[in-house]
Length: 469
Ligand SMILES: Cc1ncc(COP(=O)(O)O)c(C=O)c1O
Ligand SMILES: N[C@@H](CCCC[NH3+])C(=O)O
Image (cartoon, rainbow, N blue to C red):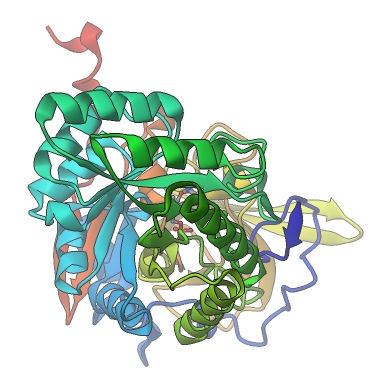
């Protein structure tokens, strides 16, 4: 196993005191550098504006809570990734957040799309995303999604098991098409992130093991299949990763495997996909590399390993999701109640309850992920106090922001803004406690465009068979 350092945003312990990295700000009204989407700023009237609109105004128009995507920021980030990785295939990971408009932005900015379910593939195709620029993932793809992918001409299917290879051969044979395939491999890189978002150690569900020999067997099988065009190898080591050591090890092991495939079959595989997982800043403790540094590092790493194995450089691709959608999104909530709780050692913690919670952002509960927040509808001269932003659900772990200094006078009716909320929050939302999921809107140049409609209680009641007469 190779160990690597991963981002500070995932913290397992939930001690009562503030973590060391969280310094009490002299002015809690300031928006910290690096956390907010590019058009977000606090204006002279004290309001936080995104895309030219005050947070309170967005809530007044769209209802609370709401997820706000800064369109120019999203598009700008997509373009930055495409240009920094020019010559690579850049696949936006739809699982981080997808709707038809986002699929169109991604298409317009020149990126490809990574989907991992029938639902994501359907949204992409209905939005008019070119099928040949889509990659399909999944460790348990149904016949239905494979059929749809094959019949619509999806550019590549990343196979994950021998059952799937058999299924794909049969379906491609029936449909009279050739499946374009990458084989997902497990490189044995142990990412030190939360267990649930590390995906390249051996003991998890994704991919074929290189160490165990299954990866080479799967590649040779695909090479010999009359219905499969074997294009290359795919590796994804995990998520919210801040340094390139893990990618270096993954590149070395996948390129060594390419050399073995060439030895076994005579074929030099055309493509290597290094997956996604590039970390972003959720709090001031997080310091991600720039996209340009990442591109330079990854290119150098692959070129170095290719020279070592005497291989031509394959076509390279990556699948950033969070790094594009995450910083572009801000969650806006309205405060409902506050209370101060003694936490020992003479310290108190202010609990600030808002009108959302673990149903719209499960990440703090699932991964102990850290976020930050500010008071967004006004400035305050009140002293900053250690606060915890919690939701409205019936769970003690229903925490949105574990530790943050907010002004002591935050009160019911105030608006809180949580930055870096565009990825894996609304896309992983649930209806726990029969809570309708928030809407998602895009803001740009003072205009609001709905992206995903807010759910209503009627939407939920419509599913209850016992309430339909
Ligand atoms: C195969 C694959 N590609 C890309 C991603 C995108 O990851 P991230 O949003 O962390 O960049 C994921 C999710 O972790 C993934 O499983
Ligand atoms: N959902 C995870 C990332 C892993 C998802 C993709 N394999 C997160 O919120 O960080």
